[in-house]
Structure formats: structure tokens, C-alpha cells
Length: 407
Ligand SMILES: Cc1cc2nc3c(=O)[nH]c(=O)nc-3n(C[C@H](O)[C@H](O)[C@H](O)COP(=O)(O)OP(=O)(O)OC[C@H]3O[C@@H](n4cnc5c(N)ncnc54)[C@H](O)[C@@H]3O)c2cc1C
Image 1 (cartoon, rainbow, N blue to C red):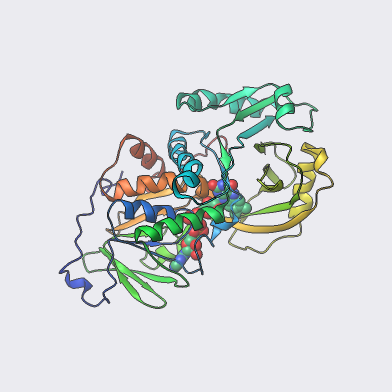
Image 2 (cartoon, rainbow, N blue to C red):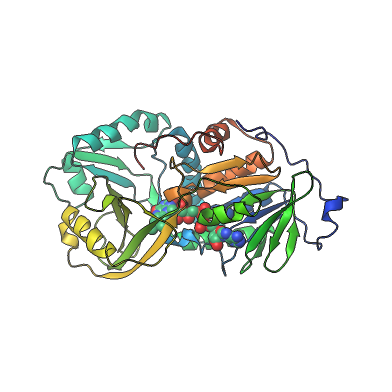
């Protein structure tokens, strides 16, 4: 377990010799990465009274893998930790516009996993007691109810499926921009187009800041929120982390009349893919994604020619009425994948003051605001019961065995 888990940030920034060579750019915490995790973490930390700097190599917030996410947000997961984190995230996304006035295209469309085989039916049903135990609105509904929820769905062999009406979606780009605006308003500093090339440490093996391509900045805490670039960042201080990024593609269509609300997830494997999932956004555009099988390891973000034929075949067989809808665009991004599919979050034991918030796999957008709250509590030495459950699951020093049943 962590030796540093409950440490509080009793670091002070004044009169410390190791800061004398820095410019006067001193902060309480520096976050590397203005993505799905970095931006919400910045405002949580600043709200708690810390002075925060976020640095990103891109030109604006959310331009890493955040902008590749299709925007799905659900709390109906298969383990306590993700349920707890995403209950908080749902609260943030669903109330953002009301509280802060920015439209992030939150859509309470729900999630539905239609089932055609006993295996998926049993797997999904086995999770219901856990999910309901957290007060979640989710049920296994009949094939007739699924037909009503997703008009035109292929009914051949349809057994029923789950329906969780309180889950939904939001625009990852609008969300990160809204979070950024709010963070800026609180006083968080952002530096863009500035790659962090090294995390700096002192002779006592303690973080003292970062060096970028342009400057150096000091802080006793550095948070790695660099997503699929984390391996490279960590190497700058000789730390190896177990990230194996793999790539996923997505597509968006022209708008059509709105005829269903949920994120539809078909868990059956197909040729070259595991599950396929899609929803209709507020404009009626379909946004679709597939999980390649076997995974396409690496960080290549160039779209492939095999993706559209593959996903079209699967989606049209599930919902034949989509056969004439035209695509507008495809894109490819990277999941910062860990061997067991769970994030890597917590204090690093090898380097004091280094906080890991990476390895978000395929759910960093939806987990972002929820995990940000735990990061803030951990950094301020203020963990509650839920945070401890979350951190046990994300412990960087766990065994990395097994994989969640439904991902
Ligand atoms: C096709 C696709 C669909 C997806 N759909 C969903 C979905 O529906 N729901 C969901 O929750 N998730 C989804 N995801 C996953 C989600 O996109 C990721 O889990 C999430 O974006 C990871 O967040 P992050 O903050 O760790 O990384 P990022 O958002 O990539 O942020 C990391 C940031 O760090 C910056 N950075 C890295 N290294 C440095 C450095 N050395 N110096 C300065 N800056 C640096 C990068 O430029 C980047 O902006 C999807 C992903 C893909 C590819």
C-alpha cells in the first residue's frame, strides 16, 4: 500500500534553497496535462486554496485524447470505485450549465445494453445488485421494452437488456473548455504550447518543479495527468509505468431525426471487434465507436480504411434503419491503457511530491470530475471513505491482475 497515502501538503514554498534558481513562477501544485483529468483537477485544487499551474503541449485545453472521446458518461459500472467516481462526475456534468452557465451539451439519454446471448444477459444481471446498492436507477427490461426504447432494433434473438435512464453524454470539447474557463476564473494559471520535458527533483528525491521547452516552474507537488504521454514524462525522472496505449476509432454522421435517446452498447464480439456503441447527440447526429479485437497497440492516430466498413456492418445489422445515414467524419485516438483496465492514481513512492493521475483507459472523460475530487482530497490529506475505496482500486502499486466484467 502507499507509504505516502495520507500525507498532507505540508510543503512550504518560501525560503527553500532549492527554489532559488527558479524564476518567481512558484506554485503549490503543477499539473502536466490539460485533458480529461488535468482540467477538472485544476479547479478542484484551486477551490481548495492551492495555487495551481496547468501546462500542456497543445494549443488549448482538451486537445489530447479528451477530444477523441465520444462523450459517454455512466455511473452504472461493475465495481465500487468507478461507480463512486462516476456518481460524482454525473453530478458535475448534469448540473454544470445550471451552476456555471456553460452549455456542455449534457444529455440525459441513459445507457442501454441490449442482449442477444445468455452470456451478456447473465453478466449484466449479475451487476444489478451492486449498482442498485448504490441507489442507481438501472433494470433489466424485456425485449418489448428495448424495442420501444430503440425503435427499429433487430429483434432476431433479442432477449431484453439493461436500461439506466440517469446516465448520459456531454461534449468532451465543450466540457474541457467550460472547465478551463471556470478554472481560469478561480485563478488557475495555464501554459499552452509548452511541453514539459523534465520533472525536477532535489537531492532529497523530492519534486521541486518542472522544466518545459520554454521555462522552469517550481512546486512541491507535480501531478502527472499526461494521459497516453505519461510513459515518456515519467521516464524523465527514471520511473517506468505500465501503460500500454491502444488506439480506437470513432465516427460521426450527418444529423437525422431523433428517434432514440440512450447510448446503445452491443457487447457481442464481431469480426475484428469486441463491443460496439453509439448514441444520437442533441443535433440528431450519430456518434459511433468500436473496440478493436485484437487491440491495436501503439499511439498511431492516423484513421484506418478498415474502420468504417467494420463498424457500419455491425451497426446496420443491429439497427437496420441506419443503412442510408451518411458519415461526416472519422477520427482515431488512444486509450492510455493499463494491464487491468483501471486507472493509475495515487502518490508515487519513488519520488516524493509526484502524484500519478494517469492510465484512464477508455473512461477518462466520464471519470475525470469524480476522480479530480479524490485527487484534491488526497493531496490535501483529507480522504473520506469513498476516496479510500477509489484509491484502493487505482493504487499504482497493485498487482494489475484481472479485468472488469463489463467495460
Ligand atoms: C475513440 C475514443 C472514444 C472514447 N470515448 C470515451 C467516452 O465515451 N467516455 C469516456 O469517458 N472516455 C472515452 N474515451 C477515453 C478518453 O478519451 C480518455 O480516457 C481520456 O481522454 C484520458 O484523459 P487524460 O486526461 O488522461 O488524457 P488526455 O485527455 O489525453 O490529456 C493529457 C494531456 O496531457 C498533455 N501532455 C502530455 N504530455 C505532456 C507533456 N510532457 N507536456 C505538456 N503536456 C503534455 C497532452 O497534450 C494532453 O492534452 C475515448 C477515447 C477514444 C480514443
